[in-house]
Every structure is written in C-alpha cells, then in structure tokens.
Length: 237
Image 1 (cartoon, one colour):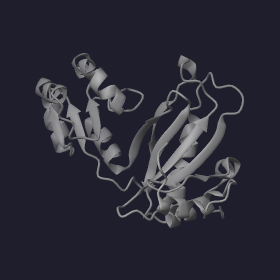
Image 2 (cartoon, rainbow, N blue to C red):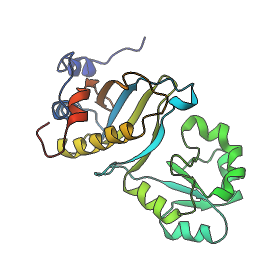
Image 3 (spheres, rainbow, N blue to C red):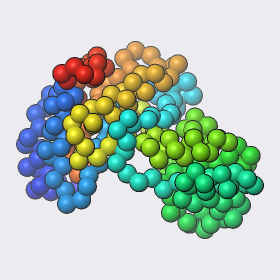
C-alpha cells in the first residue's frame, strides 16, 4: 500500500466526508493545491455504464470555455497540401509516412495526434503504441478530419478528448488550480453538460453515481451532483 505523505494527511483533515456545493468544492481544491509546481484541476466521475457493451461507451470531446491552462503540442499526420495547411495552422509536428516511422521508433514529443482520413490505414499500425496512451486519432474525438485549421485551433484553445475507462469512470483535467473558482466552475459545468448530452443509449438507471474533484497532488473532494447539474451559471453555486 502506498504511503500517504504528511502533507496530504494534513490536507485531508480539511475535507469533510460529504458532498460539497460546486463552488465550495472548487474553493477547497484551490486551498489544497500546495505542491511545489502548478497543479491541474481534475474531475473523476463515476457513471452508471458498463463500457464492455458497445452501447454503453462514452468517448467524446469538451471545449473548456476558460481553456486548459496548458500548452498543447499537436502532431498532424497528413499528405500533400494538407501538410502545408497544418503547418500554417500552428501544428507543432507535421508529416506523412516519415512521421509515422518516427512515432513507431518511440518519438512521442506531442500531446495530441490528428490525422486526415486518408492517412488512417497507415496510422492504424500505431494502434498498440498510441492506444494505451490515449493518443490514437478517432472520428468521435474530432482527431480524424480534413478540416485541420479548425481542429488545431479548437484543441489549442481548450478542446479536450476524454472517455470512460473500463470501469465506467471518467478522469479529465478541467483547468489549472491557479484558475479562479469562477473560471473552474465554468469549465466544470461545460464538462457536466457534455457528459449529459452524450449519455450512451444503453445507459440504464441512475447515470451519475459520483463526482470528485482534486488538484494533481491534493485530496479528493466530493461534489453534490444535483447541485452541479441544476446550476445555472450566474447563480450562487
């Protein structure tokens, strides 16, 4: 069993075992982000789905209105004029078969990989390498497209792809702990609405089971699910 640090033990004393209103939870997240590096704000959401069934899988994208607070390094696999188009749109790495070869050899200097549809047969050979890292391009994730300028601009501005893991839990970063509580709330609300809009057709019964937020190195804080879903931005949370 992993040893819990004294710092984390002290922070855990600040957290009561109860659901907090969204704004209360985000205030606590900020207070407990005491690591010596800029921590991210993370959400961990347990849903009433069983992803082993195809009609209970969740994989989609969310655009965080206040951004991610991160610099996203984007690689694009394309050919012909699309290579020039991607470079002009701000992609950090662009190439065709030669970029596929570099990735096969272990080059992973990117956070997101976009591919044009005509390159996907060649990109498919990277599945075993990219799949476990969550980097494999997919149409559902908006990372297989011919509209490279729009895709690059959206992901640079705060668009994220996420999915439910095999146990039906979504783990997603929704900003930086240094963001204001209000900006974190805007991003968290956008995430909640995206998950509701993309409820899998096969999901039965209670969809939302629990939601916890935390900073990268901080304790988990339970959020009142109903309060978050009922929240209209501009109201007190």
